[in-house]
Amino acid sequence: MKNFQAKTLSAMLEQSASQYSTVTALSTIGGQAITYSDLVKQVHAISHFLHDRGIIHGDRVAILSENKPEWGIAFFAITMMGAIAVPILPDFHQNEIRHIIRHSECRAIFVSNKYLPKLEDEAPAFLTTTIIIDDFSLHHGNLQRNKLIDFLEESEKGFFNLKEAALKFMGKIPEEVQPENIASIVYTSGTTGHSKGVMLTHGNLMSDAIATTKIVDIQTGDRMLSILPLAHTYECTLGLITPMCAGASIYYLDKLPTASALLPAMQHVQPTIMLSVPLVIEKIYKTRIHPQLHGNKFKRSLQLFSFTRKQIHRMAGKKLLQSFGGKLKLFCIGGAPLAPDVEAFLREAKFPYAMGYGLTETSPLIAGTNQYRTKYKSTGIALPETELRILNPDPQTGEGEIIVKGPTVMKGYYRDEERTSQAFTDDGWFKTGDLGVITKDGYVYIKGRSKNMILGPNGKNIYPEEIESIINEFEIVLESLVFEKEQQLIARVFLDYDKIDTMIDNVHLAESKVRERVAAILNDLKQQINARLASFSRLTQLVEQTEPFEKTPTQKIKRHLYIS
Image (cartoon, rainbow, N blue to C red; front, side, top):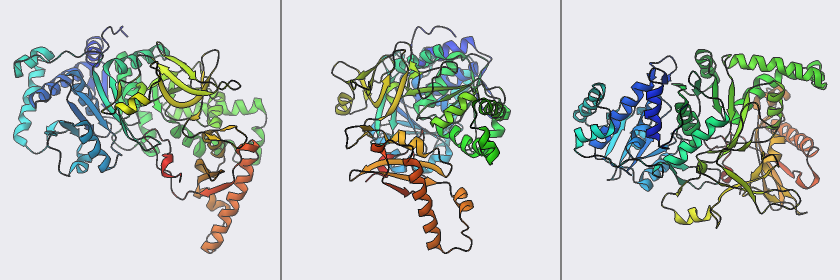
């Protein structure tokens, strides 16, 4: 990978297209591959088309689409011309999508046919252009569609220098993009329920991508299978921009990433690198691996001896690698805490996992490791050029809020000076809202969100996330959420009802009797959980959650919806 002197997305794309021209950049599974050379031509053509529609430097342009190569083309076309990309998560409610478009005053939007119905309400007057991302045609107005085709044809003839093409089609040169220019406004829908527009500059995104390439080995020839939403900064920065810095190839599913779709896709692509949230690997472990390791009394007895357990886990790890296509060298996990029992297995299985920690406001990664430097329960060390420290650490434990300073930290929240001011210390450090400790060798250990922390009756800090990780280790629990109510600790638990069915014969039982059995199971579960907890953090009550919890894009539970 070359050293990118100009930290802008357009400079990176031009440089990668020059260095890796014939290498596959983007593709769907089994679909037509787009080389780096073809990619930059299409990006220029669509960027010019936006110019022709009156989009100028600084205008906001939204993207509402499932993952596909066209998403990346649209993103780079917007940012290359100095406009600002506004990625919208497809899972957002129609009202939230409407709010984002209005708040950011988007002048244009790229939308897939699949999500076009979410825009059927009357559009605001400033939204003048709607482009179907599937084929880059204008919505409503087939006559205008030919204009885009003209641009594409011109790009094939070689008119894909941005300044020359702008002069040819518009008679003026667009403003040159600078690292301090905003590249993207990302609207978060976090666990607290307050959506904010995070302004990330070209310098933010490129600094994060370049720093990431310095801690993990990614290069041309690597293949990435994308399974997380591109509208989230985690996938956009680390799964799109970062691999493109190094000339890697990215493949997209054309369907939901269910197990039935993922397994054949991984065999087809044979990815060398993947990005994931903990929930993916935790589900694989809980549904496929754990039952095989603990399926009967004899297997459970083998787990009691360190030597035999490690040997068995190593064999299971080899099988797991084969299910991922057999070529995986790096499995990156971030976005939420990883269950300790799952990480313990991955370590003994010698599965090539790596942990990372960050926020949308930090582009996102601020700490991480490669697969060789992981430490149990740690999210890694600070990225190059990034400083981390603890604000007001506890004198005894060293715990406190993690704050960060560096080139990846956001410019602020869009049209929200008050929230922006509150997010920084007086001397300019960004307050993450996460509580943790940093060891002498620089490793970061996250305890939980500061807003979630509960102060126990004896003055001890209680971290709901730590209790939840213990609860989730039990086979009959799929998800849990711990909160305080009237000075009592309560846990909502979503149970594995398939396992519950095997525990109680409900075929001939009345509903009232079934509920009694479930209540008994919950009571027994509470006792087992409390036996593993300190006295000040024991649960008073377990409440059955009958449906899966609603989650953020990185699969963290939206706590505010369930705590009253």
